[in-house]
Amino acid sequence: MTDPRQNADKIPVAPLMKEIEGDVRAAIRRRLVKQGMAAYADEQVFDRVHAILQRAADGRNLDALLLPELLADDKEWAIDPNLTLSSHRPATGKAILWTKQRILLPLTRWLFEYSQTNFRRQQRMNRILLACIEELAVENARLRRDVDALTSRR
Figure 1 (cartoon, rainbow, N blue to C red):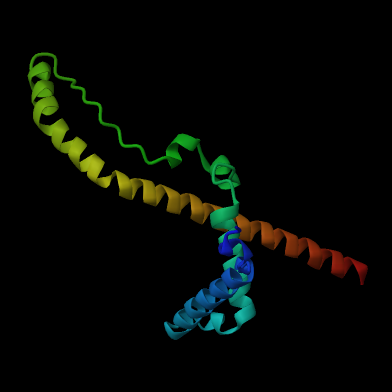
Figure 2: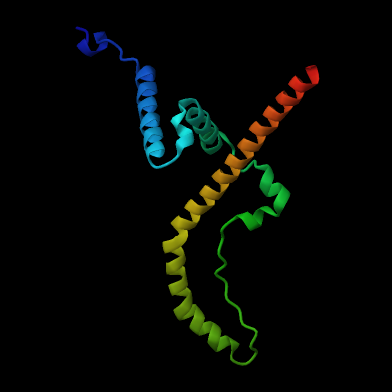
């Protein structure tokens, strides 16, 4: 005996997913136009912006960005609060450090752990925004190259 489920028609998922994604993008575009983003009234403009931002957010290696390389050391871009304590006081320093380690450090650690999710989210957002800026700069450079090539042919 054969399983009747094996004879069932296969449902093509790719076209269905493409239609659902299109509906979601259209709803987002309508909402943004309604909220005052008039440039997105042109569906082609919205689709192009969506594609650039999607490529920057998903398709890019967020560790391979030019802007952080140009601006400063990579460590300055990482959100990494320092939780070490020290004292410059020779006589009372040990007592102050003991108090900080037993009372203030646990409170600070709790606050840090509470905030850590937001730190990670902010760091990801910063990297995605840098990727978007770089993606737009690359797109602008390509367009500039094409315009220069067209004007030099004339």
